[in-house]
Every structure is written in structure tokens, then in C-alpha cells.
Image (cartoon, rainbow, N blue to C red; front, side, top):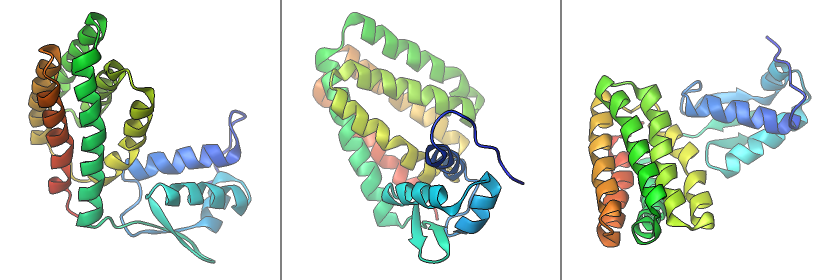
Length: 213
């Protein structure tokens, strides 16, 4: 079925966004080969914008390029996943530390409100709703850090994080994540930068242990 490109954004950008969303949501299997010819037909475009989108996704670690064929969804090995979440933990740990040092009262209230929005989905084991609320919480912490570049780097890692764990998130993770969120928010509120960093690093780094390829 041919998909119609909308007027907003370039064809490459739209294809990139569509494929990235599919990858994060588990539409494709790890190791699955994707034909750029078939994708071009599906999107109703030439191969060029599909290849350009694929190159961007390859540079970000979602796929690998197969010359003359198309691309293959990566099969993330344990070392790659561990390194990614360790780096994500370092980035967001730094954000939590800065938040404990710099957050205004309004920003602390934003963190608390985001924490509250996570509570219902966590108790209901609603992974989809929790994923959105989870991003709100981490966004609030990063915003309170006051460091825009750090925030950009940390948020850039989120899509790949979702890609790695989309087939492995189980309901018990939600309640554990919410408990960890509460501890992080408490450390930030009490102005304990070292503890806030330690808790956030541990929160992010533990996810690689639950990923089974």
C-alpha cells in the first residue's frame, strides 16, 4: 500500500520519522532486512529519500546499511546495550545533580507534578501511558538542570533507549521505575546533588540487564 507524503517537512524527514517510530515501537524485528525498493514503493517516492533516511538511522545506531539491498535492523549485543545505558545514566545523572543544585521552586513543583503523572500508569501496569509520563518526568529533571546542551544530548539518547527495551519492558518494571523516580525527586528536592546523580545513574544503567535479544 502506497503511503502519501504530507506537505510539511521534506520527504526524507517524513520517511525518517516514520521508520524511527516503527523501530521504537517494535514494528520490525531485530535483524530484519528492509528493502529500500519496497519502502520507496510504500512511501510513493524514489529510492533517494529512503536511502537518505536510512543513512540517518544507521548513523544513530538503529540499522546497518546493506549495499545494493537496503538495510538491516541491528541486533544489539549486550555490550552495546550496556554501554548505551551507562552513557545515558551519566548524562542524566549529571542533569539530576545540576537540578539538585539549580532547580527553582517552580521547577521542583514541575518535577513533583510529573512524578504524580507517572503514578497512575505505574499502578495500572499501563506501559504506553507510563512511557509518556516517564518522558515528562525526565524532561522536568533535565529542564531543572539549567544546562541546555546536556539536555539535548540526554534527550537524543531516548529514542535508542526505547528501541532497545521495547520488546522487554514488563509490568513489574513500571512500579520499580516509579519508586526510583520518587527517590530521585526526593534527593533533588532535598538539594542532595551527589545522591541525585547516583540514583539517576543507577536508574538508567539497570535497564540493560533486562534486555534479551
